[in-house]
Length: 334
Image (cartoon, rainbow, N blue to C red; front, side, top):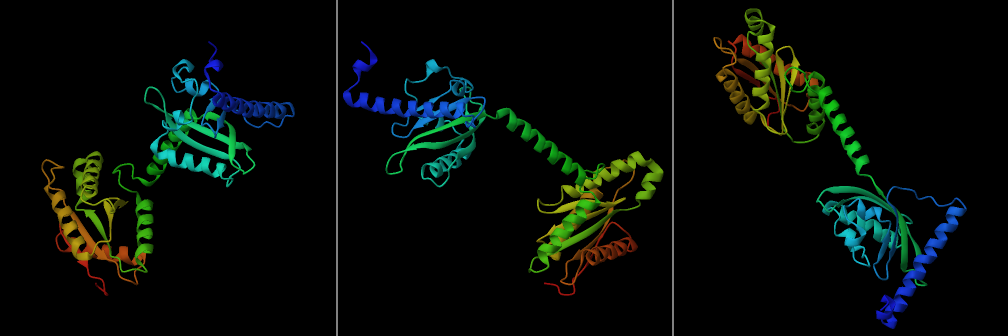
């Protein structure tokens, strides 16, 4: 028995209406192509969505790229076959774009989304379409559009972004010690000063200098000196929190920035930092130590005056015998 003989009169009427809508769209598109007005092009092909039934017609490539064959699909494919496979992070933006087109807020429906293929991998699609038929009340009857597989394009974009981030990181990093370089740490301090100048936030900085570093180079050679620099930098980096920063200021000097940290707390941080360096076994027959000068931000401070205060404390620490922390109390201490 032919399939149409198994349908009720109502189902036949519904099928006829749907086929009429689809055929009307195909004829319109054919006319556009003839007049060279049809703008869509892509690698997966056209789709058509009937809003009355939820049924979608599409180029088989759309499901084949997801790992399905047409034989695996139901005779009538509902649009949820695709939407239920959309990545959770992309589902709401995709549906919002469709709603905007349905309601007439947007002439074009366009969005990018990830959709899970049969093997569980995510493919990137770009959908572009528009509502092409509405009833007398303005309600959407049919939408038509085209879908693009942009998985490879997204992979290239991610690779480029990764390379850009790597390049930016390299431009901000001291090649030897892998902490921030001089420019990067001074840029960070400039940013932190902007944050605190019109607020009640605290800011503490420190200059850290490796004691008798010239003697280390002269006695053990510059390669060993480099290893000492890297080890001290590593200790400093692991002694601070996520919001804090450390950078190589120059030679054997490091600048450490502790935002949102009062002087009293900072002194404890730097004292623990000093003890960690002194307890390390960088050299077999010689203890490596650091002297630290600490300064708290005062309201009249600039970048230069704040660093200068920390520098003066560093000189004082060296004059007092090295391997110690010396700090300057802000004039308007709070």
